[in-house]
Each structure stands twice: as structure tokens, then as C-alpha cells.
Length: 391
Image 1: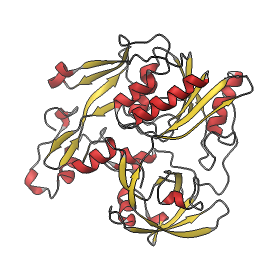
Image 2: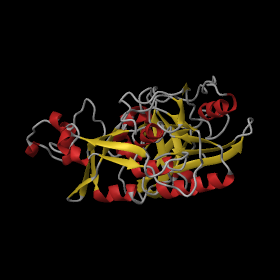
Image 3: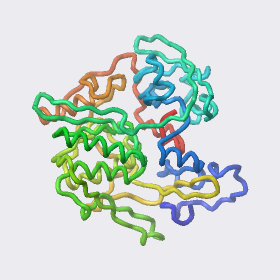
Image 4: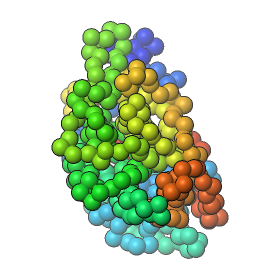
């Protein structure tokens, strides 16, 4: 932290013997005015997630709300929660193992309520649906294989355009194969316009972001720069440029639509910023999170230290700021609506823009729906949970 860490000059000198854990020490070492991301995790948990796409849990992504509760953002297919139709996107968590959702304000509280991260551990979850009816379910934790593409579809819209749409929730190593398969299908089927839904994508592996970007552009190859990686002044010799990959075929788009929120961060922002010099990017939703920095994994003993070590720039030597990337069309989300439906104001705004070239007004959310926090949901998450965002 006093060497390769991006803000090493702001790292204090501490008495390490006074700390009970490495995680407690790290909290006091990071440059807290900016760094909300550096963390420590076990080597096994790191490998399970980033390499294999697995974790132990019940298969729900929650979001904290302005009213002091939690909404269900989505259910992971094949998970314990997916076995119960009464647990659905947009419903509210009422209580977890007897702890009221109103008493849970961050991921530390949520993990405490959920109990041990062990296969076979039972979780009692009470859920309130859109009709204000509360039902209780018993879910048993298991090893869950996460999907990066949690929804995809194609449709021909009013303008006659063939539109491909997908929700990409994360960038991990298995994401590359998922994107290869999806893009191959979109190219084969003649998709002419692309809508990428990054509303829940807080980033991950940058090579996966580059892989996606390489499928959409016209006339780019391994000579075109996707991202420049800039280290601190002690390690400027490690600065390098990452080029696009050459694909056998691409979508050859003139523009791309990206749905964003305050949880769109890091590698998903990198995608937007990296393709901007080459293509028109229309962003729909709200401003993004604002994480133009990246990390390396540093193994020690049985753990991994993942600190901020570089800043990302595009081919024009520009970086986005910690205020995030502003949307082309500012549209409020309603996360009770199905992905890819005309009832979803974000998807509808993208379709309207394709049809008539303007940002459209959208309907307000149902009264029972509790609006997510104006700040990023990610800001209520600590350490590795900023990456995983599922329980």
C-alpha cells in the first residue's frame, strides 16, 4: 500500500500490531476520500467467483431503498430463490431470519442477517409482493453458478430495425464465453441496433469488457486502442495500452445504446468510455457510478489483496471522473417491470430513440414500489460484495 497503490503518497504510517485483522488494517490504509473499493478476500472465494463464476448463497440481488428497506432486483436462474415464483423482481424484502429489512442498512448487516456462508444453511425470507401480501419462504444455501447475461431478446420494432437487447450483470472470466455465444447469435440473426443493459453492472474483469467492445464496432482491429492503463509515478514503466481484439465477424454498428444507473461502474464504464472515440454511444437512465480506476489481485498466504493500482483512459487520453458519465437521456427506472418490456421505462426509452431519434418521457413507478437510493446501491456494499452484489 506504500508502494504500488495508486494513492501511495496519501497512505498513512500505522502500527500494524494494533490491528486484529488485515481487513481492519486496510480500512485505515486506503485513501478514503476517493477509494471506496480496495478490499481483501480469501483466495478460494476470489477464485470461485472470478474464475468459475460461483459463490455460496440463496440467489438474490437486493437493492437498498430511500424508505429504509430492500427491493429484490433480480433472481439468479437455477438458485434456491428461483424455485419459488413468489420471490420475484421488484418485490420487497420484509425480513431475513427475523431481522426486519428496515434494520438492514448495508451489506455487513445483510450478511449478518443471512448467517454463515455454508452450503446447507437455511434462510427464512419474508417477501412482500406488489399487492402488499407478505409470504415467508425457507431457502437453503447452495453453490450458485452466476450468469453474466441474465436476460436477452431480439425484436423487430416499428421503424423496421432488428434490435438485440441483453442485460449484462457482471464482467468475470466466464462472461467472455457468454458474450461470444450471444454475439455470434446476434450477428447470425442480422441484429441492426444493440441495447446493452448495464444498470446493475458494477464491473469486474477488464478483458471481458474489451471482448464485448470488439464485437460491435466497424473497422477496428488490434491496432486500435481500447484502454490506456496509467499507474502511479513509481510504476509508470508499467503503463500500457490495450487494443481491441480482431473478430471474424462483428455487428458493424454505427451506434450503441447503453442503459445505465448509479451502479454502472468500473469495467462497464470502461466499455462506454473505450468505444466513444469510435462510435456514437447513447446512454439512457442516470449518471454512472464514477470509478475510472482498476485493481490487481495480489495473493498472500491464503488471501488476496485487491487494491486500486491504475487509472483507465481511452484512446484520446481522456478518463471519466468520479462523478460518473452523464446520460444522453435521463430516465427514471422502475425495477418492478420485466426486462425488455415496453413497461420498463429504460428499455422503452431506448426503443423510442431508435424509432424517432429523441429522448422520450416515461411513466412513473407504482406507488407500492420503493424507489432505490439516489446514491449508488454499491455505496451500501463493502469490500468484495461490491463485485458480487448477490446473496
